Length: 178
Image 1 (cartoon, rainbow, N blue to C red):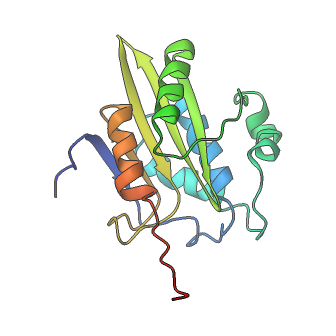
Image 2: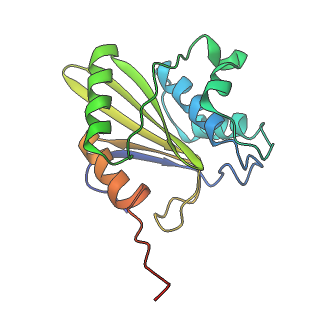
């Protein structure tokens, strides 16, 4: 194996939101992952397993809005919504905004919504360096990520490449009318 260029670590488990019955709970997984990282928890397979267990407690088919999740007792004190922005996940504007926010606040979790999925990015800023962690509760056979996973990146630019090339690639819609 080995890591893909630009990645600092990969933590994977076989369980994911669908295997634990949380078909529409990716927002809860997202908030739970940010909560763990805010408290400087070392992310291990055990940590990831616990995040998946919490997310799996929500088994309804209705997706919850991030604002609704942040109103839950578990999240309302430690996590605050600092704002909402509308960017394509691989846009330069998103990466610039993320860099600005993490330099300003030192630790920032971002919930990235690309309907119907929600994933998270957590960044911390120390010694003039940004540390980037990406969390996704969805499995992906095409990216050889069979379950929930954390991926660490050397920079926001490597995260942007991952978004553009792997996670949120552009979709070509061909004209099928002709």
